[in-house]
Image (cartoon, rainbow, N blue to C red):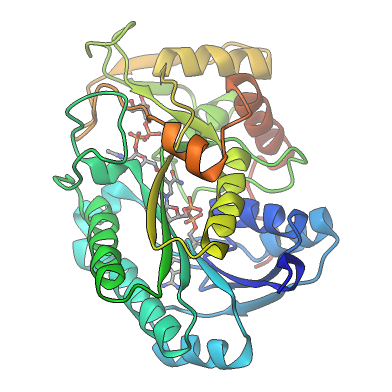
Length: 346
Ligand code: NAD
Ligand code: UD1
């Protein structure tokens, strides 16, 4: 069957990474069905996707904790692949409300995998995270490095789901599964029409920096300047969300080849410090970003960056965009949508 006829179910497709991936899926010629329970998303995003792609697609408001609704969906459509983004992702909240995270993330994945197996759709891309590596023993981090030792329930849900997928693929070799471990996604689509829209004060660095730049917050708190890094601030592997989205298209190509279970890091392979990120954003927005040095954030690591050689070799994927585009595109989204999608009715 030609690629243009393939239907991809995108769970959590109204969210940040999901919405960017939907656009790349259309560009690559796939048909798309999106499900989301909108617990961390706004329906306006769907209008924006439609405007960008000039494509119609099906959206169903489904909570993945409801297995019957999921099953009905698989009776309605003949999916070829599933990309599973839907999850709760706030690390701090997961520490305060662990059961909420275990229930939502693990039961949703379990329901999905069972329904997929029942309907003979055994082709899955799973959104994992660099957080599964816990405290890395060496840098850069390769896919062969050990996983586990995650310090928060959010990270543990990603780790447990990965373990579940390993076990399933071991006993049933008709599954094809690509686990993608994302490093730090930032930026937005070139149009500035879709982007990351955090509820409340952003927990992650770059959405916070963008809100300071637009005048919504007085300054950035830099969490620690006494790490053993170049300038003492934490170093991360930031990756443009459009590069990340394109990684999913490559993963689908891998699934079409019936690949068994594969794992890939999606990062750039290059780390930048908090201060380097602030400076790069200042260049993009054209003015100074005030910051203050604050205590270290508990659970933070000094330095994290990916070895991306495996994705390059086996997925034929490599990040294209640099720090400049990451900051310019985030700034474009933030300026055009200072209140995110809100203000527009859900
Ligand atoms: P997001 O919150 O923007 O998107 C997740 C979507 O899933 C949201 O639209 C939410 O409404 C939906 N959802 C949550 N629970 C659901 C349920 N039970 N039923 C149906 N829909 C549900 O998050 P994102 O940044 O786009 O992340 C996508 C995936 O990538 C997540 O699995 C996340 O854990 C993973 N990830 C994200 C990052 C990051 O920094 N953004 C890093 C590593 C991994
Ligand atoms: C965090 C999560 C991780 C998740 C990832 C992507 C924690 C402990 N880890 O990772 O599980 O997969 O987001 O969503 O929350 N920083 C500041 N000031 C801020 C915010 C962040 O200085 O206001 C610093 C941090 O100390 C870190 C860097 O900026 O050095 C990046 O932080 P962040 O964007 O939260 O990502 P991670 O810590 O990598």
